[in-house]
Length: 143
Image (cartoon, rainbow, N blue to C red; front, side, top):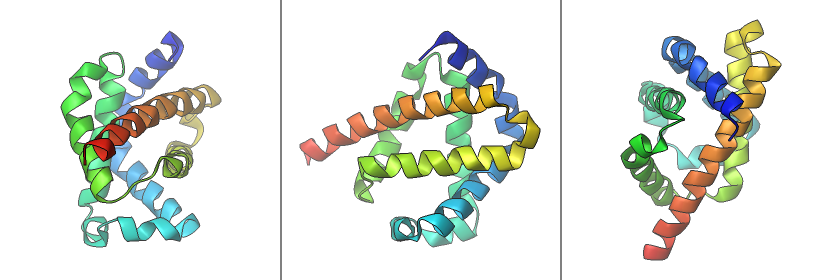
């Protein structure tokens, strides 16, 4: 990941802290509307009570905050990766989530989601997806 991407993503952390739940709630709305086939992998009661969007918002904020120190996220990544394995998340589903997350960022932040911000988050998301995919492959091999 480029230093420019790291700097831009870190600079968005305060905005994510403030608007994170709105962004992640919007992301799930977009994803379930455009990719209803993934709905079965989610606890819909956690969607309804807002706990899943809140958890994702916390994780996205943590990533933005620690993007230059990913070791600080190792425990969280491991926990999430195990959950993904338990719900049968596949590598080809990551682009769907990324597309919906970026669209939600644009929807919620409007003009503040500049092309540079979206480009940085695209690069950052792809890097994080690779981390999860690799960790999940390790877990699948252990099982």
